[in-house]
Image (cartoon, rainbow, N blue to C red; front, side):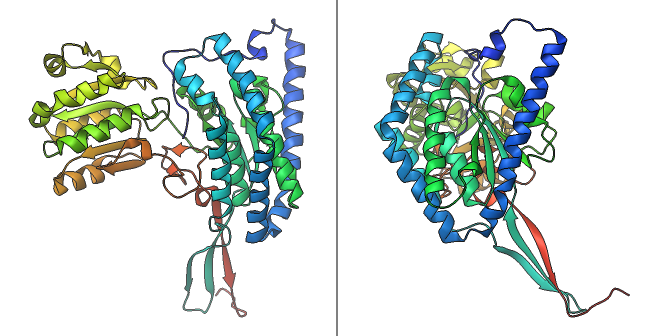
Length: 448
């Protein structure tokens, strides 16, 4: 899952943020050093591409399994590094949702290992024939999947991204340069060291997965401007990070915006199913991008709403409601206009009554982020219309929005949920980390 905007907290500052002002000459020299370092990392990454291209599917599977075993072997060191990051984050006053994203324990680390293992055993996305045809002149055309090249991944507090991104890129034959957030710096270093060690033990170059060595933001700027060095940038984080990447990048970007996810309880929703789905979508984990942020309720379903609101409150959720909702639940706080456009990443839910399906579609079109939206209904026609007309990367019928996750799609993991419309959309897994080329076979044809 991807990280997203956190309106309730500010980002922790890196050493670069708090450093004293420098003279222009010092700034120029620091910028130049950053560009040189990224260029060196890019050259090392690009030097791995030939070896990755020559690797068989079995080679890549074996290497990723070895990376998973290396993470298992270094579990104690990784968890100790995470404990240091957690202590620092708590001292900085990070919000509970961010602390939850950062925290690793034995089970979560086992989940990271399982994700790498699953990616290892996925079908190889490289070399697939995407299309083939023959022209009347006898030329045979084939469109074949190929690696993207060198991928830059810029992400924030979730350390599992370090292993997920590394595994997915290697599976697709790419090298990757990782730049994680300052809150997870120790954990990321430990995970990266284990992963690279595992690759090398299996005969693939450890330099295929590199981690930017410090948190100086000049290195981010250098990575974004590394034309000819990096082939694509994947940002995974809050709105401010993604907007900066899109504004400053000089290389292609797989865009991902916040997960302002909606669920519509339609007039024909089953009340028990609606309760279970709303509760899971909001409260299973509140700090992930697939967490429900706005619950829309058809006015004809309103008589069934109070028990659902009671279940949410019992689970610790605070409610922000429109006038109709506040009339049904005295504990709901009146919602402001800002509530409909807020990704809380917390146990807070905005709830609104709507007159009909058209009104729900209008609300989602106005306030949604194009990430994940769901409808709960037994009316097949309403469901099909919702699935067709909601222009989001993921749309669901009678399922929780928390399924917005590459692992749940069968991808093993994902680098992020792309909300753009170019190249990749939805969970970015191995297939989305490939491009293609055309192979054309002839028998001496010349063009007249």
